[in-house]
Length: 388
Image 1 (cartoon, one colour):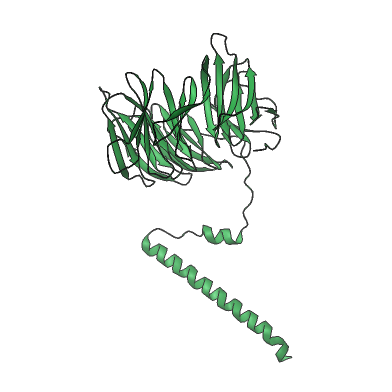
Image 2 (cartoon, rainbow, N blue to C red):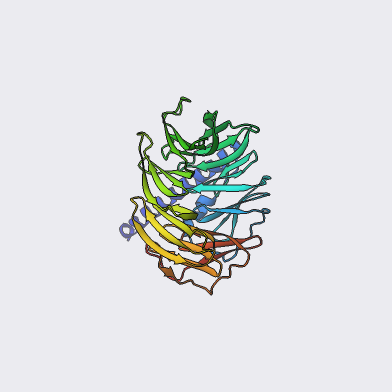
């Protein structure tokens, strides 16, 4: 009998050793946390013994950060900026971040779970994730625009009051100033950082049209290349994965080679008025309006090779649209419509939503959209899984 009980005793011995080690590690962690002043957090220990439950999606969100609210998706959380500050609420309806800052004209840009909120015409900017503030910036000049790249580095464009001198400042993901260039002529519109943090593209208006200036060495102030578009207005630029830049003009989509003197038309829509656009997952959604025919127009989905994936004619006013990962959420004057990438309409999971009071729509993960007005923000879902 003693020989039969020996394996059990060995097993119990190993369990006691492992438990003793766990206790020693836990006590050491608590001691170090108290000495450092950071305080112990046992969330990691709780997570080990508590399986993660699927997040229930809240149907209504309460963003109480003043007027002029703008929104961005932070991957399972929604960021909002308003006249009184910024706020982040996860998809389950739990507030994870709040920061007070006065902004007269709030704006926001987000990618890969990082966001920059800024005051157009003001001097305040905040860079943050769903968990906390990463950087608080007060600029010398008035902010024109700001953008964040996939690595969390960000660029802020400012304009000196009373003149045309514009500045583009580059900060790393900890808010440290890494680079700054000044444009002595023209009006600066925006600046974007390449995904690898090595190149900066600056968009500005000149007396002759639009210009994109490229800086490939963030150690020197001299530009490496300029791309000029005489007589036309470029309203936005975005870096592509291959290092080229997508330029949105009032008449076309252009691809600009960031190193050679090359630029070519990806998709043209001369003769129609650009009502809006949205870019996601290497596809561009366009809202084009017929000149002089009320709200009549078209919605289009185009890829980065100029291929037309979908097109639909609309006769109603488009209040707001947002495109993400294969679906387009559009708030029209008579209600919300979901479209797939081919612009085939997708049923909703609830009754038709009225457009009354709606000012913005934001396409979210899991085939959902946030519908927001001055006094409300609600989630609407499509009733079928969208094939991306």
